Length: 174
Image (tube, rainbow, N blue to C red; front, side, top):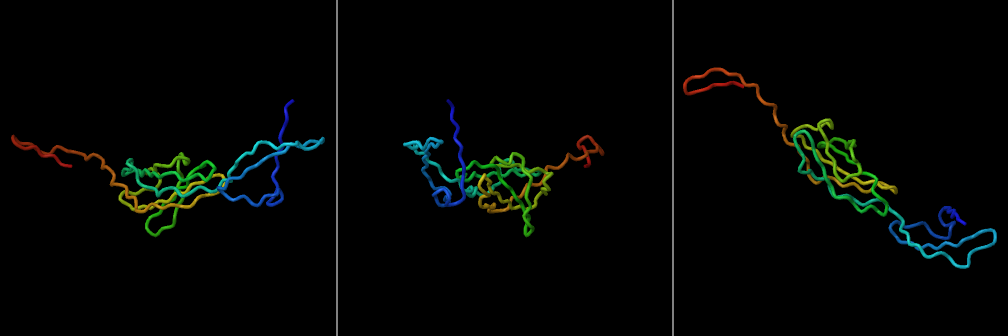
């Protein structure tokens, strides 16, 4: 016959333990109880670690894919605190402006590419910061150590017009 285990949580100290400390291992054992009584032996010990907020990711840095029309940022993922990273929050600012949160596609990856539509201006100086989020909390922020400056955009091709020619020269204008 199948059995069902019902588990309930009680507020701090009501279950005989103190509040859990993040990242600390705990050992648990369970007794079975029914209307007839309690089992003589507990279950095997199970080790569990209380999750904590994620650590600090490495500082965001400009990747090789940065161009005049986009900025590619990369960072090393932090320790997840015992709970999987659910995503990253990326913010940007120029000089002394306020931080602005950016909408990032694939926010769960430790990189992102910000396109022209993200208000990127050629040769402008940007500073970025990133922090990780897990089920417990938001981790500490890490800021890019130096400004990211996208290159000037590649210009459109010029409009050429034929002007004159001689036996030894050809003159065109742009």
